[in-house]
Image 1: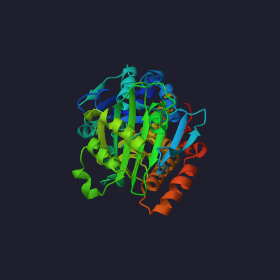
Image 2: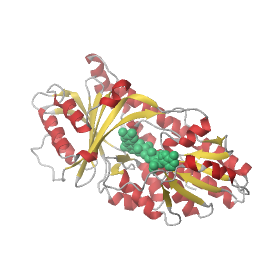
Image 3: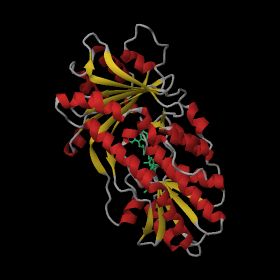
Image 4: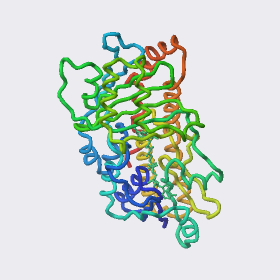
Length: 416
Ligand SMILES: Cc1cc2nc3c(=O)[nH]c(=O)nc-3n(C[C@H](O)[C@H](O)[C@H](O)COP(=O)(O)OP(=O)(O)OC[C@H]3O[C@@H](n4cnc5c(N)ncnc54)[C@H](O)[C@@H]3O)c2cc1C
């Protein structure tokens, strides 16, 4: 009989817990190092969730509740090109319709986690509990094999135990400033410039590509009240600690007249002015390759599985970190429950399950991580003007063709 201790009550940990609860056979507990649940109002962490993420949230019974927090449907992608804006304020855009079967919404992570926590009725989350303080106790338990599910994020303690070394994620060389502006939706007006219209099209993602200076900006309306924005820029590691506030930095990035048309600059300024400072933040973009899914914590002889960022911190270029974390948790919980229900409950059985989990997830996760790394490298590359035009007008539209671009949003895991 094995029991599972889930360390981390964010997307990966909650998905594991909810699916274990739904299957109802494996005993589990959940702890999290933070003082309490993140409230929906704190932090500027709006995340884009693709079809695969929504599929898992639906399977966990919380999809509709999460959708209520961001009522709009994404159906159009537009790739704008900062370098091809025309003097009279019009700017060249390429509009793509995403395949109809896909869904891409941006929602506050706090809202999704709240929906997941509310659905977790079979176990309470122990806040203030750090897994490093529990491993000895878990290792000493006798009579029953125990499993630690490391869902403790990109700087995972459990991962360090498995690898027996300091496996710090790799800094990708750029940061992301992001924020949520309060701008009520209004019906489009014929006299709107494309820049302003983009702010009001629900779900539409506008991507402005820099002129080879390692910058890009993205904008997406979240719902009737809120618009999400981000700006990525290359920053040398040595300068990370001295960055100005995200709002200041975005203002100076977009101030130069040569960068944006006057209408787009006005639109970005409107966004920044409508963003409360507590809803703006800056994060380093990082990843760690190859992913690590399972192993034994050597000192305590405890079996462990990793889910989400603990297994594979990923750059945010495809908006797939949460989707992968949800998929991991759902897949692991199903494999554990299947084994348990078939009375395969020994430590040896558990080790077999963990290897199956690794086989099921490794290829999928590595593919998404590498694609995300490549997309980031291409978009952040500093280039001379002729090559920028080639990249922005030819390579990016080809690479971001919806048919190929959204293939990462297909769900590769069995339903149960
Ligand atoms: C700039 C940026 C933009 C992003 N945009 C998107 C996006 O648009 N779409 C998307 O899908 N993803 C996005 N991501 C990625 C996404 O945020 C992560 O992939 C996701 O949060 C991972 O979830 P998780 O559950 O694995 O870990 P986390 O969300 O990091 O949660 C880890 C949890 O573990 C707890 N914990 C930590 N240490 C311990 C410990 N020692 N013991 C117990 N508990 C512990 C923490 O308190 C926390 O609750 C973005 C990331 C960045 C940096």
